[in-house]
Length: 516
Image (tube, rainbow, N blue to C red; front, side):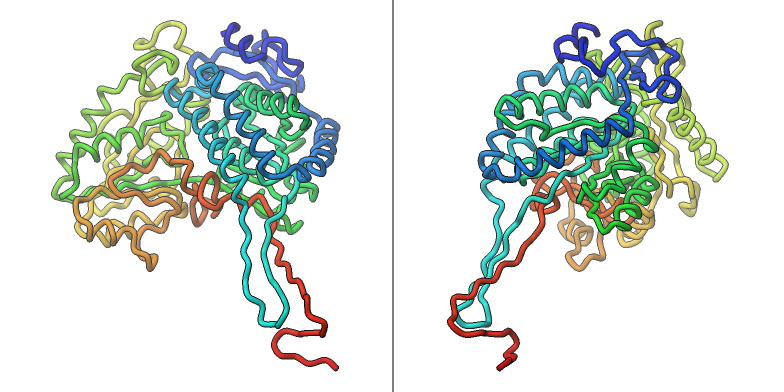
């Protein structure tokens, strides 16, 4: 572990205490201890920022923005290109640190860093395509156009479950747009934050651009509330719970700022009887237990046609029972730990509630027996991925709430319209999927009139989890409505300006108005 921290420059980092006392907490010592969810043991500690630190960092961001926006966009793209290459050089180390601190399996940790590399590549191309429009004027000898301008310093608030890629989605695109980023990470993942940001800022600094990427680590009371209320941040991009998003949205709206919100998901999979059931099975297993159910795109509800429900559920349970749970850094592990003991308790409470509402546990439903783990992992937060069958009538209110854990609720349906209606019945609207062999059913699910899936992401013969950076990522309803990553999401980081130029010798007014 120490070698990994050393290779990433964290062993002598001014903000890192490499050998923390286990009882130190943010409240009593001004630090946060990063613990491995796989072992429960401390990795290192990070000093928290104060209100004075926040002000200093924000002032530097404001000054950096004034310099950075004057750099031509393709030159900004060159900085981002080199940052992406710098991440390539340490891909496995960054992925391993992410796994160590967050608990997702190593393949997913490396994959997440790869996602940041991919969005850097995307952003490099975008730096030459920040296109505006020209349009005809109704007035003679006049020209009209639109252009997109840098927005300003932006605050990026990220959650623990994707502590690298979500920042990358925002920061890489914002950088080519001419913005600077100040990153407030989850207190559960400060080490991967520092390692990631330090690389980006080192590259930018070597190219003559200081303070383009900065980090402020602190509690919501000290840092978060200041940031979201601060007019110097015209855009706040926040990823987290729906409750958090409501707070961020209301405060930013009060000052007429802009929000980019990526909040909760309660995602459903519909499986038709004519689907490729082997493909549907594999996709559902990954979608429901990947990252130990701690993805916003995790499959949490499964709607099976009644003609296949019993057989498919039995096969799904058998597949669950073969999954290897344990050390996320070890080869062959498919499910690592939950992030904290509190997450384990939420998992147990959801199962208890489901049973009280008439649900039946098909498999799982418990913590992993510590006796099945080696001694060094027995302080970790391991649970057994769980399938719960809804009672007749599909009444299972607990399934309307998102529990950030590997629990899959199984329902049945007769008619596709009913399945789509049930899928859309939750408050969130992030990701959705259907498995079908029918083009008619697929198009019904993707109805361009909007009567199909009401989610921001809709997949046919793919699971709910696993987005590509080329498409805009985000959801509707309580998921917040934000869009990050690909497509035209770069526009969120810029402001639009409509420009009109007259080269007429006379005053020409629109709408035929004469003023003489």
